[in-house]
Every structure is written in structure tokens, then in C-alpha cells.
Amino acid sequence: MKTKIAAPKTRRNTELVLLVVAVAIVLVAYANVGLAVNNSLPVDFYTLGGGFAVVSFVFHLALRWKAAYADPVLLPIVTLLNGLGLVMIHRIDLAPGSPHAAPKQLMWTAVGAAAAVALIFFVPDHRRLRRYTFIFGLAGFILLLTPLMPGIGRNINGSRVWIVVGGFSFQPSEIAKILITIFFASYLVQTRDALSLVGRRVLGLPLPRARDMGPILIAWIASLGVLVFESDLGTSLLFFGLFVGMLYVATERRSWIVIGLGLFLAGTYVAYLLFAHFQERVSLWLDPFQPGLSDQIAKGLMGMAAGGMFGTGLGQGHPELTYFANSDFIIPSFGEELGLVGLCAILVLYGLIVERGLRTGVASRDGFGKLLATGLAFSMALQVFVVVGGVTRVIPLTGLTTPFLSAGGSSLLANWVIIAILLRISDHARRPTSEDRPENLGSDDTQVVKTR
Image 1: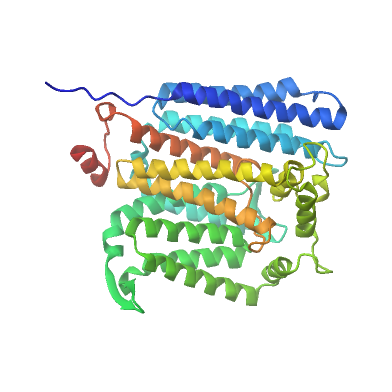
Image 2: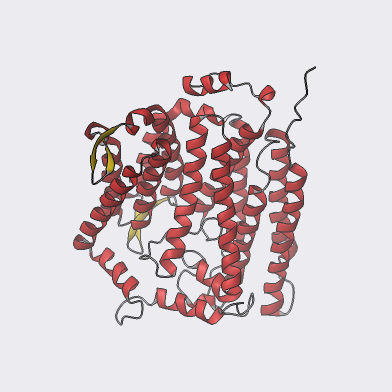
């Protein structure tokens, strides 16, 4: 007599409960800012708060319809982070002379969520992305280079990472990191056996064959190009670190990490010798209170020190005194008003996103899904480390945005798309095999489906 295996639960009701809690926290925080600053609810409390709630619950309904087995924790966490970012941006808007960025951020939240829902609808199986491996790779590298194009490229705050078309500004590297991650995942699935072969041992460390060093050298040269021509240490570190991390996951050879770290340290040292902008960043890292240099890091550190353990309270600090308090330095803004405890809570939320992404990679039934989920999760972990490390003086300041918190449309759009891809992969990983009907997939993935 055959025993029936119970189908896994979709956990959509769990997601709904967590989503209600996340939206409630955001609305309470938003009301708290208005009461602290003006002794009344914000005038747009119902419109901005209601709009945010509608965006979140529409996404939830889309998952119920098209990705019923997707991870139930990712959407509530992202909703909470995005909402807290809106609250802090609105709080900084209330300071005299500050631009009103919160309505625009809500608009970009809706655009990012809409793009994520569109991906859920039009990409029913993540393995279809492998059909366009080299198209994604080429498009990603072109996007990285567009800020260098005359006429549309812009140098802002020492880094040439922006393009402006018709008065509309955009940071193409945010989209490029997604396309390049897809390219890396697909490429490494095909070549991981060759890259795993050992050439010789040096000091007990198994090194790869010399002819297999090409991919990492190309990635190194490309990241150096971004660092040299765009003066963008953050994107360069993110791009190269992502490739080395995915290469290690694909091959399980620690020698790739050693080689990668050696190459990156050599490249950054040469850049330090050649470029004054990079030298200034290092000087600020070593001594942020040095006279004659920017006092941005110093103000951020003093703001976090003023917050102490539990913070001054939402609306009761002065985060606007730090330059770019709603974008590059939004972490010190939270540190001042929510304190060390609040900041640690935010970092735990990011840790949960990374953990759920890595768990999705482990649970995925195909090699491409494993590498893609791992790469996307690692890219978010690396970006948060670079941002938080920069404002707290763990590493030199790089200028990357904090995912979901910082003001900026391109970053918000890209990170919502990353979450959509992770949700799609997790839906496939948890879905019963009887409901999985892949078509026109790559040979590697098709074989996995047939034999499981």
C-alpha cells in the first residue's frame, strides 16, 4: 500500500500575518515622527501610509496567485525595511531646507514592487533565464560602461556612476549587478568542473590550472576598469567580490578566494598610488577628524554617538546635520534616532534576508538556481557590509546605497527585482515535483528534473 506524501504548506497565511505586523510597525513609526516633530499626525499619514500598505498587499496577492510556495519571510522583511527607509526619509524632509524626497521614494517603491510583480508573472521558471546567458552578460557590462559615455554620464561627488537622460538620473550599476550575477551563475554551472581541477600546490594550497585563470583575470581587469575610470570603489569591490564568492561556491576551492583577495588588494593599492580621490577616502578612513578634509564621516560618527544605546527617538535627533543623511548616510541617521539597539535590529533583518537567500540556494533543485540564489544573497550581504563598514570606519567609505533604506530609485528598483528572483527560485524549490513542468530548459537543468 502506497503512502501519500503530504504536500508542503504554502505558508501564505503566515506571510500575511507577518506583512500586517510589518506594515503596522511602519505606520506607528511614521505617526511617531509627526507627533515628535509637529505634535500631530503627518498630513499625508493616510495617503502615504495607505499607499505603502496597498503596494505591499498587492504584492502578497500576486504571490498567492503565481508563486504560492515562495518563501513566506522575504516579503515582510523587505516591506519593513522599505517602510522604515520611507519613515526616516520623511523625518529628514521635515528638517529646514531639506528636499521632500519621501513622496518620490514612495513612487519608486511602487515602481520597484511593480517590476518585481511583473517578473513573478512573466518568468514562471527561473531556469528560463539561462537561455540568455551571454545577452545578460553583455548587457551588464554595457550598463557598467554607460556612465563613461559623453553627454549622458555624470561625475557626482567624485564618482562617475550616474547617467542623466532627459532630466532623469539613474545609476546603471544597480541593474548591471543583477544581469552580471545571472551571467556568472549560468557560466559557472557550465564550467565548474574545469575550474575545480588542481594544477599544482604552493605552500600546501591547491591552485587551479593556469589555463583556467582566464575568467578571474577578466573579472579583475573589469573591476579595475570600473575603479580607474569611474572612481567607484564600491561597485568595483561588489563586482569582483561577487564573482570570487560565486566561484568558490561553484568549485569549493579556497584557492580561488586567496587568489581573488590577492588580486583585489594589488589593484586597490595601485589605485591608491595613482588617484587623489582614492587617497582622500583612505585619509578620511584613517582620521575622519583631520582638518582640511570632509567632515561627513565625523558628523555621522558623532550622530551615532549621540544616539547611544537606545537612540534619541524618532524625530528627536538631528540626522540632517550629516551630508546625504537620507541616502549614503542613512545608517548613521538610524543609529542616532534608534540607537545601537535599533541599528542592530536593522542589521538582523538584513541577516535574515541573506539567510533566506542562502537557504533558497541550498534547497534549489538545479545548479543554476543554487548559484543564482547564492550570488544574489551574497551581493546583498557584501553591499550592506561595504555600506555599514564605510560609515563606521571599518573600511574606507565607498558611496554605495543601503538596500531598501536609502533614497534612490535605481537602488530600490534593483533590490525589489533581486527579491522577486529569490521568491521565484524559492517557489520552484518548495513546489511539489508533480506541479513542476519545465519546458525548453538547458540540458543540465533538464537532467536534474528527470532524475530527482
